[in-house]
Image (cartoon, rainbow over all chains, first blue to last red; front, side, top):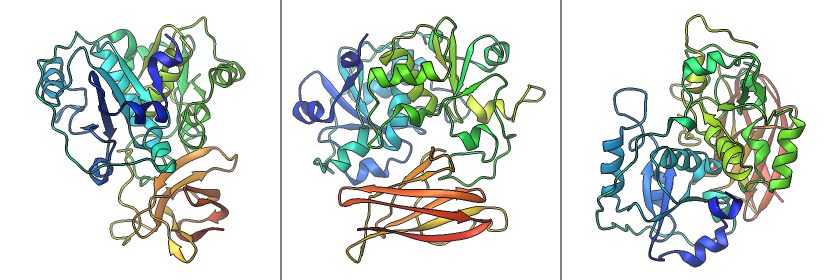
Length: 275
Length: 97
């Protein structure tokens, strides 16, 4: 796995829009961005409506994922090129999600929607329904997904990476500051977790830093490559960004995303918290 | 969840006795700048949040009392301002030179 296997530039994406075998997919939590203009031919995935179970807090199941991708016209052999807003947070989440269900070839557009807009590249409002497919998903690959009990058991042994901002890590604020701060969960972080914000891995235009810069970043922060790693944030999308950096760009082994993240952990009765 | 709510507009439903709201707008050449990326940086200059301005050029953050830096990024240029925020409404303007 190397950078070119998992990441394409905005230039490359613009040159290859409409190529057969490629499906461009915009992933956002607020899909009004897509509706206001998207890459020509791109289909949309709504982080909440499409990728979250409507009742329980969990993913959609394997069959629902198959139905979703079939209806959007995505085939097992297609190369899926993901991009989105929020510095690709939700696109990275979708990348991890596609990998969890075994999609073979998935890539991110470096910089996502932000770089695309800042570059003044063209956006289209046209709808592009694709013919339905018969998508088949694999059983979820739980080697890349962590659950709460494993997180608690990992305190003091595995690399726990809290990728939220320093003020969320310290408990000064409870959510990223574009959201109201009234939350049920306690403030703080998992004991022994290191705070390596996702943003340190990205440039201001949303692109990822170079492999050399990323390797230096995690070395400086005391990342122990000999240990398994669990990344978390508040709801699991920023930690997908870091999961992508560690596993897909830097090639670290045994890296999991804890998508329950602080919304779950900070609400658990009886677990240790540090502030 | 992490998608930013609609930017700007009325403050209905926001409890200004507990929330530290930092809001304002981005301007360039006498006009508001829609679609600018505004990020909120903490006292150590670390990223805390980012929003995209509304059609009226507005942005809004929910922070905590303290010193914050606002930095906007748009195709027409960038602007930066540091402010001291308290509980309640803190309004500011970012002007792109």
